[in-house]
Each structure stands twice: as structure tokens, then as C-alpha cells.
Length: 202
Image (cartoon, rainbow, N blue to C red; front, side):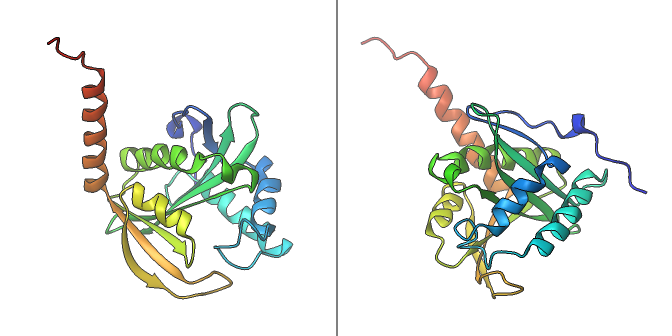
């Protein structure tokens, strides 16, 4: 039997408005809310049945609790209300090539608050720092221009298209490499340092 994951090993750094933690059994209601909401699922696929949601939750919860890293589901918590407003997933899809797939879902009210960029930067940083990953894939459903804009701003590049399958919509895979992310982080750090430097007196 696999040992359960140590919470200390997977401590996520809080951001200005959000906290992050691993999925727990108490998050089943949120999981049900997200996957049964037609608006949330608009660019994902057909809303799931109660049976499918229940089965999927048990599976991802078990994987999240395993010591061996294969898949992790992170709960996204709004600091002001202490409410869980979404989930983010990362799973290994090719261990030899060190490729993982990422994805996230927010409740409908949280989608208008600009949280996606905030948590994406933090969780991508964490993935490349602590996981055996060199490349991240994000699948974006056809017509989801908002998420296409998000992944573009994060440095993802468009990759191959994928077909509709098992109730999920067709779309395109977007790709981000460790090297690209490292260069973008370095550039951001330099810009921040430059802004902090006092201006020379004339």
C-alpha cells in the first residue's frame, strides 16, 4: 500500500488573495458543484452525472493522497472568505519525457475576480521547482478565448489539436517548457529590480 503524502512536502506559497492546499474528502461538494454546473463546463464538455462525479472524486482523492507523485489536485481557497473557489490539477502523462498536464476550474462567481493568472503563476512555479517535470501541457476547449489568452500570457505555445472524446469537447493542447518559464521568471525579476532602483539625479 502506498504511503499517504506528507502535507509538509506539498506546502504551497500563499498569494495576495489566495491560499492553496491539497484536495481532501471535505471538498467533494465543491467537486460535485463544478462538474455539474453547465456554465463551468461550457468549454469543457457535457456536465457529469452524480455517479460519474462521485467515482471520479474517489479516484483523484486517492491519487492525491499517494506518496508517489502521479497526480495532485489542489484546492484554491479565497483568503478573505476562506471559501474554496476552485481546483487545479496536475498529472504526469509521460514520465520518461517528464511531461505533465495541468488544468483548473473555478466556480462561476470566482471567474470574474481575476484569480486565474494569480494562481497559475504560483502553481506553475511549484510544478517546475518541486516536480520531475520539464514540460507542461494545457488542454483548452474550442472557443475558449479567455483561457487561450491566459495561457498565452503565461508563455504557453499552441500545439496539436485533440478530438472530442468521452463527453469532453475538442480543442488544442498548449505547451510550456521549463526553459521558457525560467527565462520569463528571470526577465520578471530583472524588471522588478529595475523598478526598485532609485533614479539617478540629473
